[in-house]
Length: 538
Image (cartoon, rainbow, N blue to C red; front, side):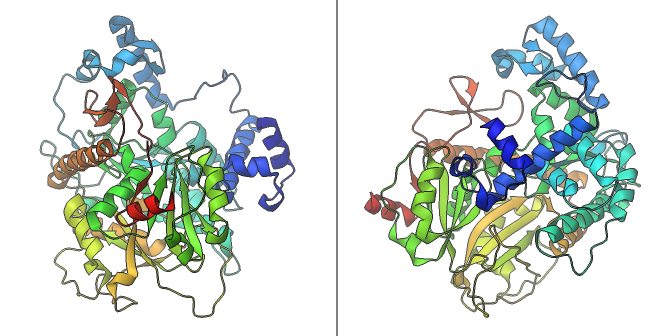
């Protein structure tokens, strides 16, 4: 399959002309294919530039600041016997006997989220961002930075000025539309976000020992997948030693399993499972608001779908570990069965047009605001999530979907993914008088760069609510742990195998017989009313 993929990519074969087996390989998702093409191009670019010379197969080049941590970890490993090599953790490292690796990181106590001014903010992103920076003719020198971010996995604060200089050259023109405009929007919004996070005294990053960091902190860019390549001991050591705070990009691709440490505090997903289908089911149970939703286990063969799916023209198909795609309900059964050969999937009603009306409601709430009862901030689902997930100590956005929306001029767009959506202002009245027309679709932690309005609004609220202050970062650690525990307990209740919650290496994880376990659905699940309909369809 790999050689066949290289052939179709080298011939620049469009999705419409791909062989059926390759389409099925990507779960019928054109966006997944396009993302693979970008990653393939990045790898080729690195090969042409000689960046991969001298590397063994599977070897990862690390930023120099991480190499010392590997040396120290290997030294510890030789003493404790807990590591098999520099980059792989033995199964014993997940047990309590490996705890000396963590306790020996520093001799002095470290206050969560706080430390010497030499520490920095770590901004975590995924490969999708580097793909956007690689695509299009954004800036001549921008691709070099994108390759470094993708391959090395880190762009240090010392290189940010050069990156910003290249981003300054990105100028969007009126004739640029469609997919190309998305690349420009991401680059421009990334530039604004980096300037906001880096050396910004308005963030009020406090330290009980050193006082208020008057000029703010430096900023390192960290690729999430590269961090995942580190063993757990090295990862904990690197993050604890170098960073006062971690902030995540939103949304990350479903292909990336996010890094969610307890120390330093993380403004982002509280636990990796909050980046999966499980989290959607969990927030739907909290808010009692959602589109009609069913999760099918992998390997299931469906003879029919619940009748509710055929009441709408379009459905949202989300394979496990892949991004969502909008599909016509008329062919949903065939596409769902194809996807189930490879992954569990979530299937949801999505409306009667391919790009329905979405509304993004940012959090935290603005300080001392009088929210109008008719605003999206007062939607019952938004209020429920704010209360249950304690969203006012972190940042992100809630996505609402208008199930009754019809485009005024008729017809469907050419989009094959979730629509761009609008951003709800605190006192903006709802488009529809009936709040029931709007249902909860998703909740994303972090700061987005796909929308300038949403990014700017969340940044304003970070400053207004002093999210990076010492007091709030202490709450972030506590609330992240609380949310993690509740979500993992929810997952355990819907598993057919016995699992336990463990925190041997810091962050909460699920374990089966003492080994970390990534839970997939073991039986079909539905959100509220979908459960009875699912039984009726069998």
